[in-house]
Length: 217
Image (cartoon, rainbow, N blue to C red; front, top):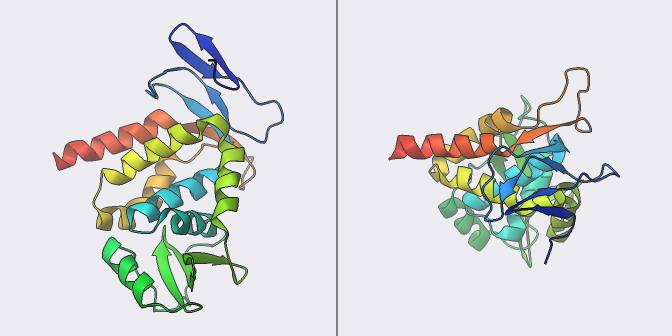
């Protein structure tokens, strides 16, 4: 059966351009097995940062729903202010597990993620990042990503996961923001801001991960 919004071309397929502009537009082609090859996506930077930050958070020990909320929070926070609180934790699987266990419902903690200080609260359902002093709902974040990436979400998320797994937890915690700057969508200098669309090169994400895997071998 032909996938939604796709054209079958032999053993390859390409995504049709979305005319309303609210979803990612995928150019190029890939094998049905999922090889990225030279695929690029036209999308703005906010959803890309949200997805990447959530993948990094997952790699650092947060549960899926927890990670989604942290990913969304990162896009609303500037880099560390000069007067930032000194009590900011660097997440790691051990640290996150201990905090999840020790914090009582309603208690808060701050984590350093992509050089942002993210406020997090313990809820009955686990840890949740805060936005405007309220816990972020993970389902709304996933829906946001599905709308913005469309059919490309699975492939982009998989590529980012491979990149995150190519490094140890301490390495990805320290380098996540630098890596994002290397693969984030390229936009014209005359069109700054989150709303400006650019080209996200999935092959570049793959190459970054492969290069780090080779160095570890």
